[in-house]
Image (tube, rainbow, N blue to C red; front, side):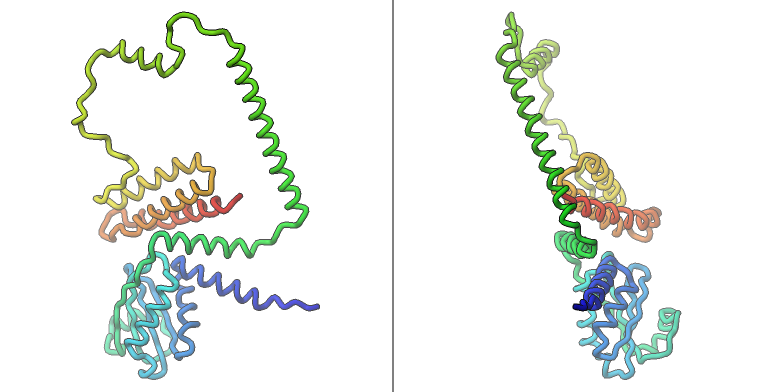
Length: 303
C-alpha cells in the first residue's frame, strides 16, 4: 500500500509560515495575506518602518479595492495572526504596477498615485492569549519530531521506576534512623532551652534590651515590583529576577512563570521610545528576552 505524505508536508509548511508570521516576520505576513486575498485578486507588499507596518494592496481595477471591505478584511486577517510587536498598520491602495523595490518612497514622493490610504490599529491579544499561542506553537513543533520506539519507552519507564523505588528506600532508611535516634538518644540535662529557635530568641532578648523600633517607619519596597517611570529599567529588573529564579526552577509551573516574566520584560523593552538613548539596546534585548521566554516554555514541556 502506498502512503502519500504530501498533504501532511503541506500542512506542516502552512503551520510553519503562520507561526513565523505570528512571531513578526514581515515576509511570512505577506505570504499569509496573499493567500487569504487571492480570491479577490489583490496582491500585497509590506515594509515595517518606524513602528508601523506599511502595507500596499494592489489590484487590476479600483472596484476590487473598496476601502471599507479591504480595510476590515485586512484587520481580521492580521488580528487572527496576532503578529508580535506589530499594532499599527497603514494600508495603501493603488492600481497594480510593475514590481518596485522602493515602492514606499514612490508613494511618499507622489501620494496622488494612491487610490486611498488608511491607518488601522490592531487589538492586542491578552498576555494569557499570547502565552497560549506560544504554547500551541511549541506543541505543533513537537509533533514534527520523530516518535520514540517501544523499546525506548520501556527503558525510560524502567529508569523512572528504579529511581522512584530508590528514593522511597532512602526515605524509609532516613526515617528509621531518625526514629532510632529520637528514642535512644540521652536526654538533655539542665534548664537550657532544647529548641534552637527558643535559644536564639532568648539570646537576642538578653543582648538587646532596647525597645522595638517604631512601626511608623517606611516599609521596605518590594524589589520585584516594577516602577512605571522607566520602562527600560523595569524590563531589566524583571529580567534579572527571572535570571535568578531560573537557576533554581525545576517544575513545569515554575518554568511557565519564568516564561511569563521573560515575555513581560520583552514587551516592556518594545515600549521604549525611539527618542530614548537606550532604544538600540532595547531593540536587541527584545529578541534576547523573547528567546529566553521560548526556552523556558520548552523546559516546561519536558517531563
